[in-house]
Length: 203
Ligand SMILES: [Zn+2]
Image 1 (tube, rainbow, N blue to C red):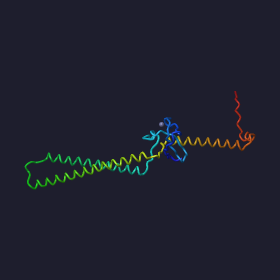
Image 2 (image 1 turned 90 degrees about the vertical axis):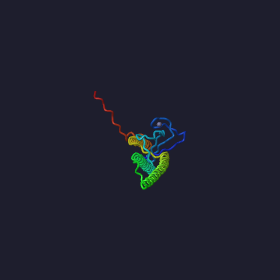
Image 3 (image 1 turned 30 degrees about the vertical axis):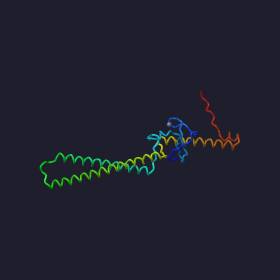
Image 4 (image 1 turned 180 degrees about the vertical axis):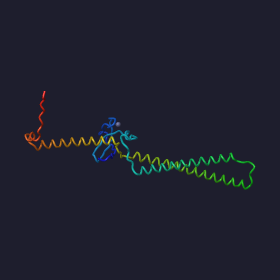
């Protein structure tokens, strides 16, 4: 049995108790390779790694990477933004009076224009990033909601596997029993199974 379960919704009439809290549930976790299945409330499937972990698609993980990249870019932009602002402030404080030749005046003007332009482009990119970030976040939560595949936690999967083995052993025993009874005469059965005598008590 492989550890891969798909969450399925069943009709209200097929409601059964949840494996965790025993409340009636219409969600079944089904494993075709067992086959194995059990009922669970949807709430236990969220942020509950000791029970299940979602198995997201490749698309989900690329979206997550994209989101991280946008966040990083946005962080570095904010820092740039701050340091350029800081530069402005420093310049205001360091302003030396009575030094203004025509040349200097011109240089200063150009510098101001440059700074304004770069600040504007930072602000533009920053709002663009915010937009992209919001979109990527929406896409990610959409993919998260769409996910139906789950992997059981180690301990949970082991208990399911053991239960399956136990059930299989019991079924096999019953099958053999039924086979013996249908194919064998009662007298033969008695000979076939020689039950050991109960040991005599020595006292
Ligand atoms: Zn429950």
